[in-house]
Image 1: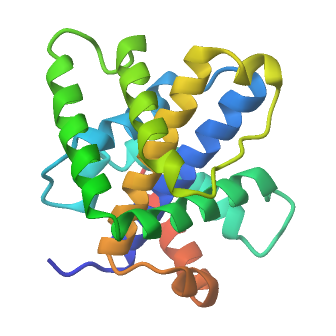
Image 2: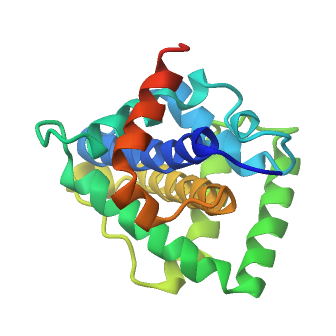
Length: 207
């Protein structure tokens, strides 16, 4: 399937959405449940005909599109250094993961097993986040360098929050995989920033 700029922007927005949710939880202990659910759902979209379907709809990735637009805008007023750092780290880790077939197989198998648990637990259940958090620790976290999440220690030391953060980082990796499959690259993001911004505005105007 041929992918265009729209597909690239939607996939990249998935990375920014996950990063922004991590930042929000780390600093406030909470984040919008509907947006979290939209990001976590992507981990279980094993087959989708379009990039948009991975996120359910444009509405499901709207937060990521807005954050992406802010972060790559030519005005630095709304730039968030932590979100930028998380996104760069996610993209670096995805590249390492892409070269590790055994780890990819383990992640795929565990996600399929976790999906079976959704017959008994809701997607937002603590048990699901615990499974996803453990998967992240056992796989992505071992690739290095580890993503150091900044925030309030009170929130970060809470195990449920820690599981959500790891699950969202895993979702960010999933979107990074999708971005690469759409022929996205860091060079494109650097040199085609204006076209990415324009595409963000076009997609957001559809909401």
